[in-house]
Image (cartoon, rainbow, N blue to C red; front, side):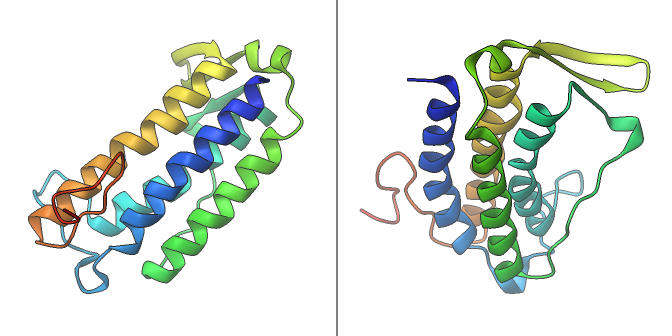
Length: 163
């Protein structure tokens, strides 16, 4: 299987779980955070919705310089968060459709001005900065839901709330 097809399949598989978590967001608690150093529910959910945009940045450009910033659409409510996730996921999958294995092997750099944070093959960046990153923050969001006594959907099998 070509690398792009494998990444698309994994994005789609993880998107199903991400949708279940985002669907359980408590509209009345979007500004809640478990600790003063933690993101709010809204910010964390929106961060998750933005991560598929990294596919586009990784494939279309040789590097990203964080010191230059980048545009982000921000959502006002749960429905907008879900819509943005679907929009960004669709764009990511479209960009991946025609990427060759050779292009996936090309190096990509994340920097902040002169500080190079890493240079890795695109295929690793997609797993590390997109897929693993989504799973990590989605896990955080499930803890937020649990702390608010909101049912946690199963992701890799049934959750305690689904048994």
